[in-house]
Length: 397
Image (cartoon, rainbow, N blue to C red; front, side, top):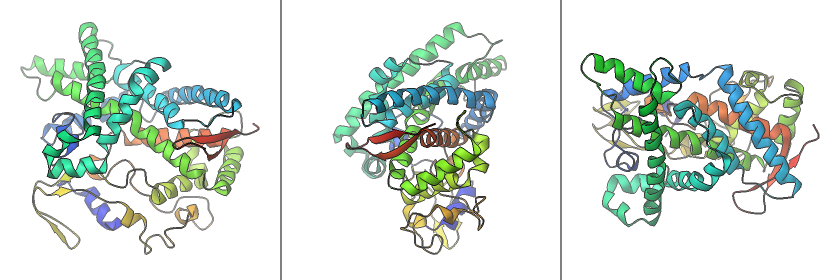
């Protein structure tokens, strides 16, 4: 689909529904923030975004926590490099992103051993189904076939482990809830519920919805971002000249005494353009999740019947020669102004499209940028000898 059609969709209020056969609906829960299509969905999303802002979204304090986690990751990567081992960057990045989302949702941090030994594989198993092309399509058309899917059975076991983890944390919050000192998303949710109950009804702020929302956000905030960062760095191993340019840019703007910050992004146009070009050339999620429209809708020349099931393949737009000349070529400068000092156009849509884009999109972009820039600042990235692994050579900083 052409980019202009995607942007038309992006602005349309009609496309906030979910097909009832979609695995993102039937698999986890119908009331979670990612699946719900009732009137309460907007209230829940708005509440999460406001709460996230209260908890540090877009503020230096949260960025400082991300930096602390990245510093720990870099230390581990340096130790692994000394042993001449290829590294599983996604595993280390997942612990970074999990620590941040767990802080926001639960004011909790899992130990490295607890995360890697107890939860990491479950996140990965769940992610494969949650974004899997076959399960998205089959789940919508022939839902009963999912019961015969081995990967779906594995994912169901993974979901049960993660759901129990979340349920236990919610129960703990219920027993120790202090309305005068809310510390995280669950506390703020319980505080909102408490205020609503004073007027006789909890509305959409049920405990069941809290559990579903928390599981949605916990999963999305852990593996989707780490998978994306690892995917971008794996792709970057193919372009050593681009890495050198990025490192020169980082050395000149950031230096060697600190990690790159989100505020540095506007001063690092080649790095940002490279990230956007990698999103375009090798998008980690070329098929979107599924959407539905509540009424017949027209975008450009296309009429979309009421309650259609809609899924987007981003590749045709990403490789449209009218928008991106020589689309198969790696060329970050296509996103830069003539003088190379600023971005001149938007890139692809890695974290969703339209009103139902990832609720934590701003945090996701920040985390991906900080992880990618920090790794390239400290290492040169080469292809690994094993699949899904990369080789890191420390830079002389």
